[in-house]
Every structure is written in structure tokens, then in C-alpha cells.
Length: 255
Image 1: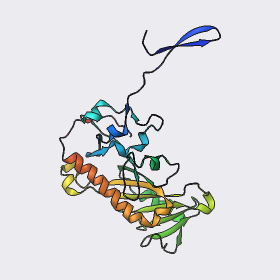
Image 2: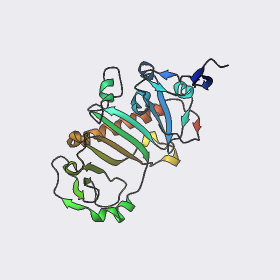
Image 3: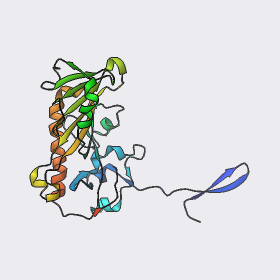
Image 4: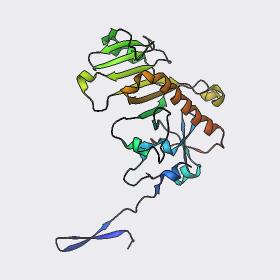
């Protein structure tokens, strides 16, 4: 009988229930030494585990199911998305000192970002854009075209009024309608890795979609947040670029 089997007494009868062995937990102290190695569209990223708050188990104070290959750095799975959580204003990863800020309900100081395959804007401008109403420039989002979507009930800020790979879109829900406990804004933009980091011909000129969300109280600082996030992803690429290349696995895994 396995040591993790348990006896359950039910209405005078004894039944045996199989219980899964407790998963090993990677602690915050251990996580500081671990990078999650992954690849999107042929570009390699080494992301510190401390940026993966999404997988953090608050009850057990750590990350369950981190594979030995990831810890040892011998796996580099191909993925569709890279998700990270960081704290404003410095785009900081998790630490013992700021853990409480990550665990705050709502956005607080958190910024949630994801990087994925580029998605063209043609469908949006050929369909949804026709319904938006133009508004005057917002002092919080200077230099951006301002619109209001009466159907979706949100303010819309665009860098261009037509489809282009370099488009930036900012959406903030109309709080007069939604009354959210934690009002937020979401940004979609493009990210191009530095050319010296994508030397292979099949990924030269690669472009990603970068999307991130944060509390609407930080809207006026969006350009600074944008620059810091892109610099962070560049750091992830440089970290992978400067290390020995690992075997790329075929399964698609979401972090």
C-alpha cells in the first residue's frame, strides 16, 4: 500500500482513498535563482521565475510544479504567450519586501503584461472603428488620438487612425458606467527585439504584440511604463542570447 493512501470512515464502512503526493514547492528564496526558459516565434527569452506571480501559490508560499528541466535550464519550450507581473514604478519582480503589494486585491501597483504573436489591425479598422466617436485630446494621454466607443463604453486612445504594425491602442473603461472597484487601463502595442539579438534569417524583423494592464491612476505615466516594459523584455532576450542554447521542445505551454 502506498504511504500516501488514506482510510476514510463513512457510515461505519472503511474505504481507501488515493491521495496525490504533495507537489514540491519552489520557495521565493529559491525562485530568485531560477529563470523560465522559453521561445516565442523563434526568439528565446529567459524570464526570472519571480516575474511569474500568476503561478505563485499564496497558500503554500511558492511555485508548485516547476520542472527539473526548467530549474536546471535544460528545457526551452515553444510557447504562445509570456505572462509577467511586476510592480510600478520600477517594474520590480517579487521579493520578500514587496510580496504584500503583489497579494493586494485588484491592481494596486501591479502591472500585468503578456507578449505574444503579432496580430494585424486590419479587421478592427474595417469593422469596429466605424462606430467610435472622436473626442478632444486628453491631458493624461497627450499626443494620442482620443475616441469614445458608445457600444463598449470605454475611452479609446490611438497612435494612428489606420492599421499599421506600429499602432498603439489604449482602452480605459468608462467608470460612469462600470463603477469598478479597481479601475484599469489596457494597452496593446508592438515590440520589436533589437536587431543584434535576432540574427537568424528566419526571425529577422520579427515583431510581437505586447499587451499590459495597470491601475488607471497611472495612465499619465503610460509612456514611461511602456519603455520600461520593453527594456525588460529586451533584458530577457539578452539573458537568453548570452547563454548556451538549449533544446527547443515542441509542445505549446502557457505560463
